[in-house]
Length: 264
Image (cartoon, rainbow, N blue to C red):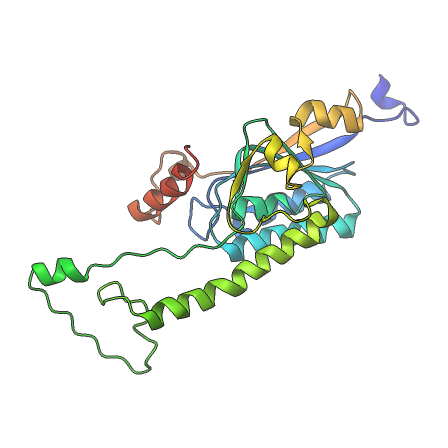
């Protein structure tokens, strides 16, 4: 009958958004398009005392990371709702970009954080083609059209242009971390060379605010009766069985490679 009495205080309500997996535009990846509906619902449904993010991501697309984080910040500021991030196995690279969308970041003692850097990776097949007697013929209109062609030898000009592309993305990442973490970052520490830290080490560097788990921390902040409501991505029946037509073998290999960098 208590719920029928209007003047009794209600327990705090906190939506919990799970952001798990590599970040990108693929069918299996976290993207702004895929998470927008659940993020929007989490901030709009009822009157949340806060929104919690559960993050487990090795990173991926800088653009998708930025779009998701920006959406979370816009809604948090519009609704005046605090956001708390809880890192599970890893919040590295783009995963840490997402964590920084929160007002504070909490980790497990064994969580991996950081990798504030940008990577460009590819393959070169020139020697293999030569051994097989394969000649490739390419004609372009525009000298940059065959830039970083994996079937041509890499040139110093290619390397310089790749570095020039990576540099502004790295600076955007650094600016995001500095804007969100501010004075909490350890002064004088070299935090932006793509190093990673574990648990308390990340806290010491100012990349996180403490070692804590979701339920006990939110009970501490919002009371023993806080109501936690999970918001997760819904997958189609085909996706559940790994049968999506757009899910390529290469995409799966790349995602596994991202996780493997952190022993996962």
